[in-house]
Image 1 (cartoon, rainbow, N blue to C red):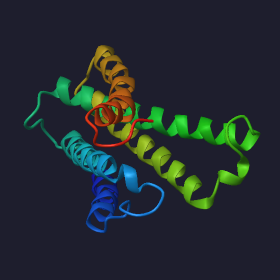
Image 2: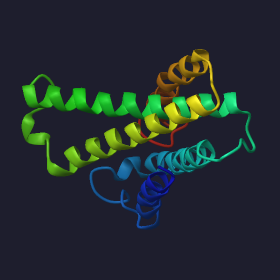
Image 3: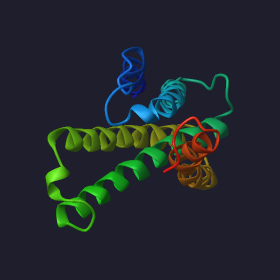
Length: 170
């Protein structure tokens, strides 16, 4: 899972090093996209650290309960994001939102990748919880943090960037 996180972070870094969004339909959003790309790189690095720490034979750096919240939060956030993408694809395929023509192989691969990573973090979370006999409250707290984290990343940060004039308002 750590390698998945780092490998996927490299994609964002390549986007930034090659100015992927400097031209074309997203050019006016390029500064905001750059901020979001670097934020996501940081989150993916944290995800890699959480994955590695969760498989360590004994707790290091973080108390087991705190790391338990993080690993369950990572699982829940990825699962909510992936399931949201599946619902969006179903909406497109059924014609409720967009059209089935918008679904392509790259989009399907993207959703499958996130489902796989979510499942991987789910395995880490269950394993970690069993090893350290974490209470159900740790799971609940991690799971409740997922929608909050997604809301901040997908809604609050872009709104803040628009308010600061870093990218156009929607």
